[in-house]
Image (cartoon, rainbow, N blue to C red; front, top):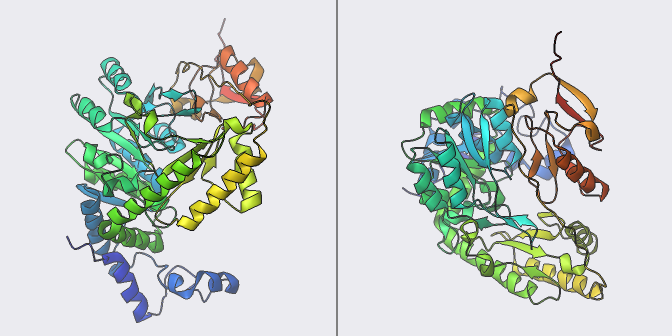
Length: 489
């Protein structure tokens, strides 16, 4: 295929050059009808291609023209049989994966540290999750991948599962042995779904972990916008093999997608695919070199640590993506949250995320050597002003056992509920989510039984100031539970 072409983007440019009189949405009509300041900032070029699914521009819901051509080029670039563009982000692509293979009551094997879009899809479709605990790194305070042996045990116990979902790479860049997991799961003739939100560059360089498609996975939701140069909210769903039905996938994707699809987002996917297909290896090579430079320099700064090859060797730490620069800050005597705020206030630096022990910096093809040197200068100063720490803050974070799932998440989420004091909720079935960060693993999901151990664990974390997310009552004084049916005498 000719990857110099951009069928969709080129069609948009040609349409804009014709400058047609528009009696269709969007109502701003090339910017004329919008706020002047916003128009001046965005620019008329962008606004001229903010269009809808008129005949010359094809329709994402039933592509038969330039969008179909663009998706075929993307499939070739990503090594897939089919690629579907998503303007609902990777969250929409993830929900499509799950809803394409699961029906009400079906089991799906998933890691416990899943993105909320996975849990949303499980609730929407009425599936029953079978959880696998990821490998916990107690030194770094983060989670890695899921071990192959855990997947094997889950399949032996639940051979009727409809799918196995894997996060690869993790948010922090660590990968499990995905190829071995795929080969194992396929012996059960079960599809493998991959949350590949942080792995778009893996398709274009052999120094990066193996991509989901190369590993043989059946579907992978990939965020092109995160690392691949497209605009925020634009992603792809890559599909291959006989275990999934591309026509059903298209139907589900259409059900979950707005009918007013953004052609700016779609065009950015088309152009990003061209850039990656033609220049992806060189882009990735330079990005890896820049990230490894940062990693080596950080490891020379007192009381800072950035993991690399030395963490590998376990099934769940089979390889890693070096462009994810995770800086461990515990020995500075301050938290990752404090480091994030300090970098913002003193150096105008924004990091990807922070937790109790770490900050995460993503090095992408959009970074420069100057950017990285500014980060290193900031970290050296931060280390210097904290070099006389008398006591390292140590917060021991033990992940409780996964609670019993009594109702499916859907039945609990949509069930009859009442609100009661959280400290008095032992043995009740929760109807909402509770997450504690760190470590970021959901502690309670709709349908699970609240235990006194979990109450004590969550209350302890709230009292020491760790952020808790999920419940409607953000103070976690109250919790929503399933109404108990009273006995009739």
